[in-house]
Image (cartoon, rainbow over all chains, first blue to last red; front, side):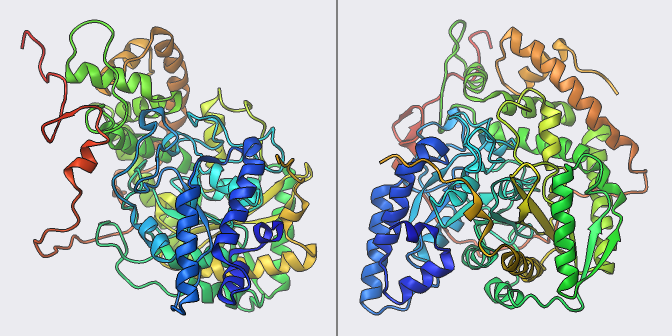
Length: 504
Length: 99
């Protein structure tokens, strides 16, 4: 059944619709693959065998009865553990939520269920999505299928690794500063951060509310478009949800696959390249620019001078918002409660003991940084200044998109690094997101797709950015570059990843 | 810009309601000092004439009909609480004895 796990979601949907294969067979094949390789990869925190197979059987029954089913009906999916799933454990990678079972579904999960997509399980992540390597998960790191001694990116390393290791054809990620795109880059997969508000955030355990956005993690651009079409659209339960009806991203991806980019203007962001970017990353990026030129695109260099301040602004805005969002973990209504070992048992002291025991190092670091940035006397210098930088970054994007249709850069400055290389140096870890953060600060959409291998044999990500509400450009240009690269390679990049050892 | 020493970390941790062990305080002071030095540059980037942006996409608030929407059964919610009694969350005393 291994051919089922190697198929794209689009191929599976076609075969399911033609009744060549059943959803139970497809779902079981992926559950078997999880059983065979996840001991080594650790992409999943929880699997959901019985419920996934029951959902698959229900789709098969409906199809047999001749019902008209959604495009991805019967195609299984993995969901990042920061998204709440009714009746299934959801921890956000934290000990403070160990064994927590949410009493409701996130809106995007409701949409997956309504689309007939069996949920295979919940994927590993840095605790509360704070990190770029999954080394900050309270449940141990996920390993990169390309090299099990290396990080799969973060925070959504579990979702990216699940897709890269053929444990799931599709996964859901969330991206606050690059947590969908950077893991996609280092695992040779595709990841999309939609426009802020394109996908409902109701039922996402919030990290930084003005930055968070959920999106697809897949192996192809078309699969991301198909999934975005399922999860996107207005939700009255999320006040930041965009109200206008989105276009079909699937159609945009299909149109792009013809690889005609005549008339397209592509801007290379001066500030997102050069010094600090590995030579193999730069070489792969430049080769992709040549392919875009060959398809008729015009490449120009565009300067976004305020992007150099984006990382600093982000590491004030994110901790500030996180320190406020995570105040709900007080040991009173859900999750862990720890009582102090001595002294009076008051609510305040229980809260401090619970948070001291339940939060990991990086979460404590960021909450305390955020508390500092928001405290009296520092607010204007830190949080206030960071919000002004945000305005400047938005102006840079506006000026750039007045000249070009899309902006491009390498997704991450390096390929996957080894475990332990950066975990004790927070600033070095934060620099992984230097190219992805500007999009979150401005709310614009971004896509990462694999552009090839670096000179170290590891995958490189190519990032495409579009104006807010113009996500369809990501799919059109991304699908075009993907088909040009595929023609050059002869087979998907992931076919060059080493075969994982299979546990019988 | 100021620096973050151990006393400052202990004060912030108390404000954030996080118990920290003495060695955690020492380590965090060193790490946060490096981070704050690195991010302090933001105050030099934008002048007084630049407005602040708090939200990436401008939005106007909308009102809906004042009707009951989705609710959760009390038992389902309390089932996940650390302690519950009589249909309510059971919490420790809010004030200390002397208060």
